[in-house]
Every structure is written in C-alpha cells, then in structure tokens.
Length: 250
View 1 (cartoon, rainbow, N blue to C red):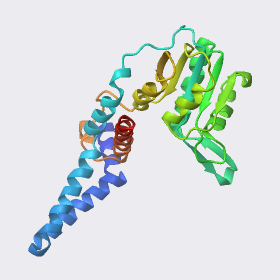
View 2: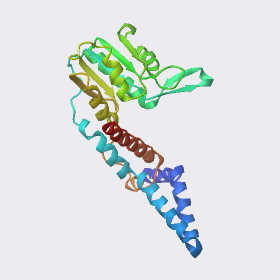
View 3: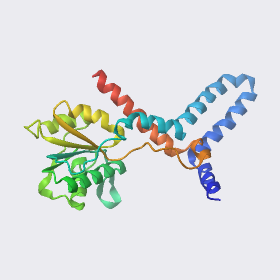
View 4: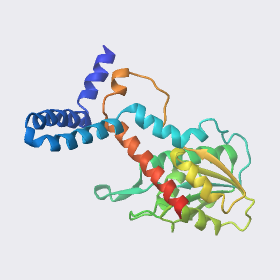
C-alpha cells in the first residue's frame, strides 16, 4: 500500500504532469500531417526533459562528480590549523527583515562546525560575498556562532564571487602555505574547489559536506518517472560540469 501511495504522489509532481501534457500534445500534432515537423521537435523536447528528470540519469551525473570523495577519510582526530567553508549564496526574506543561508550553504556550515568541534582548529574561515544584504561569509559566521564556534576563531572573507576568487582571497590570509587546511564544500563542488586551493596551499584536506548521489533504492517505478527533484539534481550537476570546463579553459 505504501508503494502505491509513493507512485500516487509521484503522479502529482508538477514535472510529471507537464511531461504527460507534452506527450498528449505530440499525438495531437502528429495526427495533423501539416504539423508533423513541429511534432518531431516536440518529441525531441519530451525525450530530453524525460531523460534529464529521471533518477538513473541524475544519479549517474552526480556520481561522476562525487565519486572521488565517496571513500575519503573523515576529519577524525587529525590536526587542522584552519577550516574553510565555502558559501552557496544567501536569500533575503523581507517579511522577516533577515538574510538566510541557502539549504546547501547551511549543510556546508553545519558540517564545518562539526569538524571544528572534533579538531579544535585555530581558525574558522567563512568565505563568499554573494548578492544579499549580508554577505555569505557574514551569514555563515552568524550561524556558526549559534552552533558553538567562538566568535574570536571566526574569520571572514567576504570579497569573492566564485571559487577561484575564494582561493585567492584566503591565500592572502595565511603567510604560511604549509598550513593544514580543511576545505568544506559540497561533494559535487569539491573537485574544482580542491584544485583551486591547491594552487596556493600545500596541505588541503577535502571535507565534503553532503552528497547528491545516493545508491539505488526505493520504488522502481518512481525511479523512471520524471520528477522535479531529479531535474533539480541534474541541473546542479550540469552547471558544475560546465564550471569545471570553464576553469580548465581559463
């Protein structure tokens, strides 16, 4: 009964409804011989949307980005001089007169705070400018204090707009390039981040905050139904792949 309920919920996903309507439109166009060229373009769009919004495809793309960090060592009791957490944007909510971390940014910050409490690092660096009223760095610093990181240990880097700039700006904070640096960001973003920070620091330990990839489980039918969540994951993965290519070309 629970499996049936899961499929029933999946049917009411907005993306699934859109795909169904597109399929119906395709057959209506195809019946009219004068509109078959348009129908073929519509069919291509349906195939593309379907492929990008099913779990096997989104999961494979996320695995490709995160595979190098699926079996990595954790922080454990390893000594670290500094923990750097990279921002993921902020959002202003006018009704609350406040700026909040994004969901992904909050996961990064939470993981960084946990690592701090395990290792007792000397510095806790929050990095990122963003576009909100408060910078990503300031927003994360506020949240870090709530999670028990002493204000005196928190350092702000609020000038960078991207990963490469974050590495350059944090490089200016430390004269000692042998500092033991724990780098906290999302697993899908870690490869590019690690590469940029290793341009300046000799000891960078990747500490992935969370993973988009997950081992196959759950209802088989749902895995092959177009779902908004899977399209969201695919979008993140494709953007990161484009960013990696851009950084290599630069």
